[in-house]
Length: 137
Length: 359
Image (cartoon, rainbow over all chains, first blue to last red; front, top):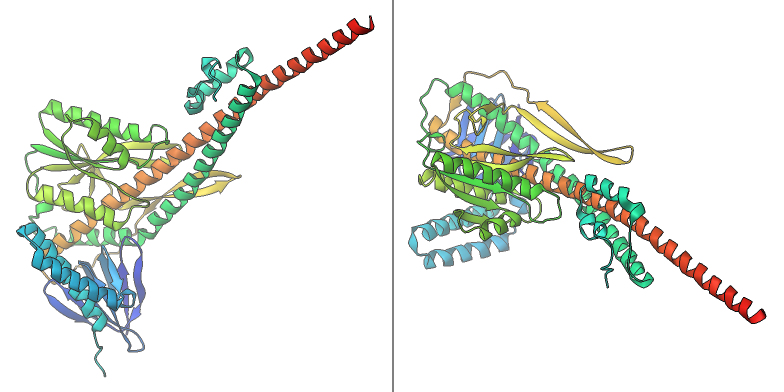
């Protein structure tokens, strides 16, 4: 059994292919989805999306919040933006993380602080996605 | 070096005139009075030729850009289709539940935010003016109803217009560069979201040009917030437009001319399965879904507005080119006549001189 995974953004189709398994970051924690999953609707939090391809290789993508619907072995993930892990430059991500940390320490006022925290979180997720080591099985 | 003695019909207005005025001016071409030297006339013809080349090039550029704008619409289609489908299914599933979301809350309207989408550049006929006129009319309506309003202007042309008019309260001026992206629509989305949730405004309306075809676009007003929880698009009067019908415009060439086909596509709805569970509270899920929907609405409007602008520029530039061609033709005719007359005069003088010597 396979899963059909579609990751759609207004800009383009990020992913449209069959996969074996995914791990999705939802608002209530990470969930693993295998074929014949119960049909659910869920809000997607910003975080990594792990994809196990048909050849058992793992891939990572980053989702910036959105919505997912799993019905009949078909997963539709809708988001305003998403990136594939392979499109992220590790050095750039590291730099962005340092900048975000520096900004956070400088930030004043609730609005600035909120924005800085969000930027830091985004930077951390990117790093996490790039440095993730897939489970060996 | 321009030829300032040309009759008024051939002043600069002839270039920018509409086709009706052009017809009127070609009608009077026989009585064209030109009072200037041949050299000036030649310069004038050259400058008209240059103008014609420029307008021709601008027309082609606009045509190429329409095509790119159309590609952007096409590439966002899978997303918007899936979104409409998901929203439709969600509605079926949550109809029985009592949902209270900040984005759908109807309040007594005290203050309205009007988002006005205009173009970044001019030379596109009445495109920008039409949108601004529509916005002005809406503001007048609101004034008469005694409702306060504030403007969020998107696009350089609108910004310039509102900056010149101090008496119109404006919230923010935004600019776009090139083809609208999710980032652009997100900026607008975030702004109106925070205004609405903070209860600074009780309603958000969007004024933009809806793309009808290459020669026509209609300025329309659409209500963005509060949303109906079913995700329907409403016009100002609260009449719902069916969200499941989506239109796609296609630029094609027909007998060497650019034409537009507008396709209406009815999105197929899958039979809905009643067993779908909600991982979180339905409110939380809608909270994730509706901003996505709002964003795609705004992106769509931005894309339509850009397509209308480019189409308007195309037709404005093509009539400007036609005018320039007409003008050049008439001016060359006058020039050739004058040149011929001058040569005839010179020959007459020579012959007369020769006659005088021999006789």
